[in-house]
Length: 166
Image (cartoon, rainbow, N blue to C red; front, side, top):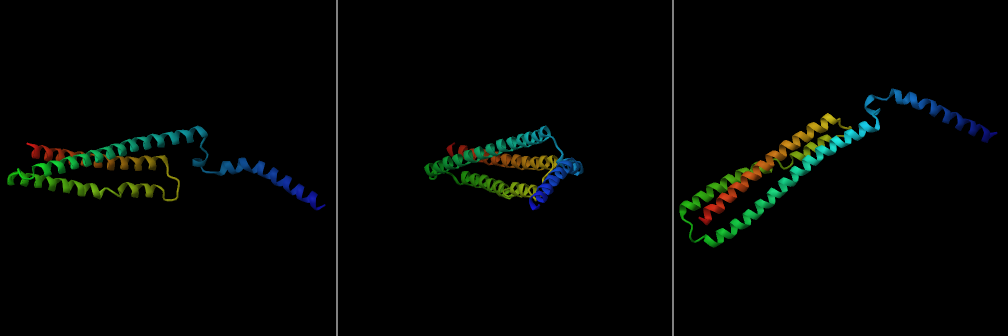
């Protein structure tokens, strides 16, 4: 008798779950009732945004590598021609170096901005596509600024190298 009671209880639970599923789905908010194609479109849009950001990050890393190569070249040029530099040339090099330090300070100020934006995006609630796009646009702006600053630093380093070699 116990077995039949358990079986009938299980059958009624299964039937209730079959009946209740469409009702439960109808009461869910529209955001959870997305079709597979909508979810795939959203994922693709997010991936497209990430690809743009990753390409810019790669450009920033390449610019930083170029920056390091220019610094090494500049150091070697300074070693070779340290005896032949005039006081005017040294003053010009110091002025350029001050500009580089100012740009480097601006670059350091942007260091944690991307991380804080990404952390804010992962605040525990699933972000909307608009919020993700907005965050990625802000990250894109930060990367543009970093790329511009690195480019200016590289131009100044190249100018210093030309000043020394002339």
